[in-house]
Image 1 (cartoon, one colour):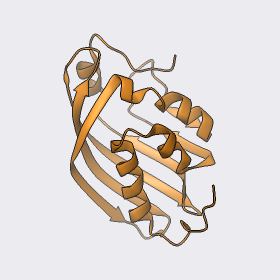
Image 2 (cartoon, helix red, strand yellow):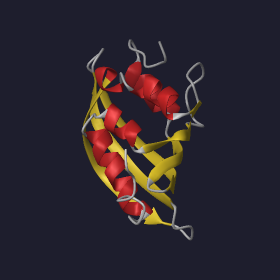
Image 3 (spheres, helix red, strand yellow):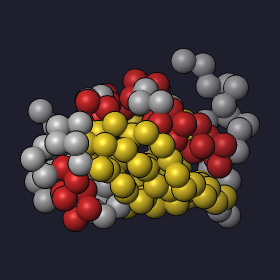
Length: 145
């Protein structure tokens, strides 16, 4: 994949593109926005679920089945902020959807910190409420197989 056309795009726009790709439930496309050596961190992941992934392949293996567990219908709130580092952007956003396995509503708010290199995600750190996640997923699960 050639990234020469991505190098000069502001981090805020790259982050918006990644969220649009996520909303489209295109996990392969989302993974393609990441560098081979991407590090993804989910510091508030519930006990027993992975909190860190190293490498595009490992992250994709974790995310590829996400749309079969949670059907994200919309991103009702989204604010993206630039930072003093032109390669870093921060998003406050929320999703609204349905947990496929149990029909529960899935309403979650996130704070996401993303670092880009040459137009690709090299560090993705996301915070969310593990109690809300666990409650929505009750009777279902989302973990590495």
